[in-house]
Length: 395
Image 1 (cartoon, rainbow, N blue to C red):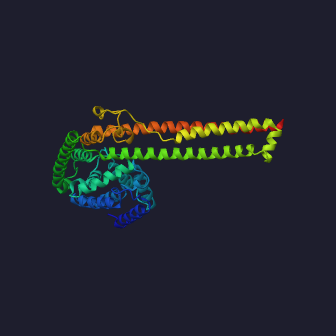
Image 2 (cartoon, rainbow, N blue to C red; image 1 turned 90 degrees about the horizontal axis):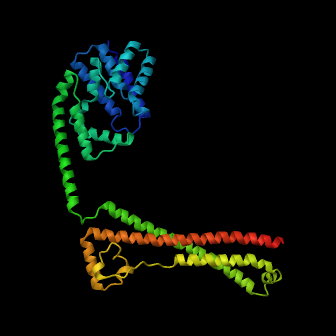
Image 3 (cartoon, rainbow, N blue to C red; image 1 turned 45 degrees about the horizontal axis):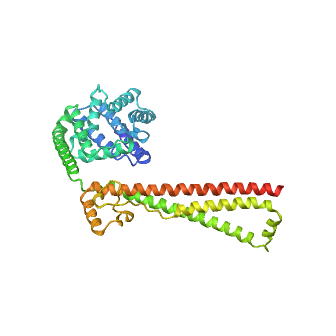
């Protein structure tokens, strides 16, 4: 006889298991899906007049068939078998029946071959979604789940084709399932085919529009240019701040040394007069700070790239008509004509922006090269100053 208490206990166990351990990111393979599979399995089994003992095995397999998702996504069926076995052994369920439950669970694995009506019934209940009006909504949940757990991403057209191929490749195995779901399955196939054709037409239309409408900028390109300009401005500001720091630091050091050495009445000035050898580290320090501050000043100096422009060469790939260092070399009328040409031609607009970024990068390269020289000179000079001063006072 069918053990309703055991089946109810199994259902409560799975509910608690999913509530406590199943990830909320599983938006398709969750308790709702399992509950629907149990419901469909019972109805299909009743259509086959399944004996109570076999009904019991089918119901237990339906409850446990997706429990493996609590710990793994790939090959979850094997984990489901272990969970079901542990539960049923604890309930002192007969080993031969536990084996049949596990066989049914493994039959739901994709690509498996079924050998018994119970297995066919569970597989049909598991894929019953393809024969329901809710197929398209639940399929989107599976799409999201695959993106999260399998890193499989699909465009709308790719997903529509994938779903159509799937619908055409599967079929219900039992007579009750065929009678219940075949009509809606045929509708779903036709609707999916129409949807796939519509998306394919939209894609071709969009590609054609992109080829024809060359003057329309793309959001991604605009974002790239904006991000690049922002990065260049930030890097330039950082370089100027570093240069200003070196200028200030070296200027202070030079001022202090010159002030004390130039004042004969000062204690430090008198000490250097009595010990001329101390002038060596001082001289090294002065030379270092001077060279370092000169490099920093050159780095911070404004630099403008410009060309000798001719009105007939305004669309040259080397010319950036958007930059004041270029367009201030030509008359206003020629500048206006050049700007109108740029606004009509997307390639000319992008060429100007690309040219501007290139020369901004060239200026930044020189700034950072001079800054590196300034910092290197300062570091080496400080080291030499300290070493020479130690040597001088140890004599």
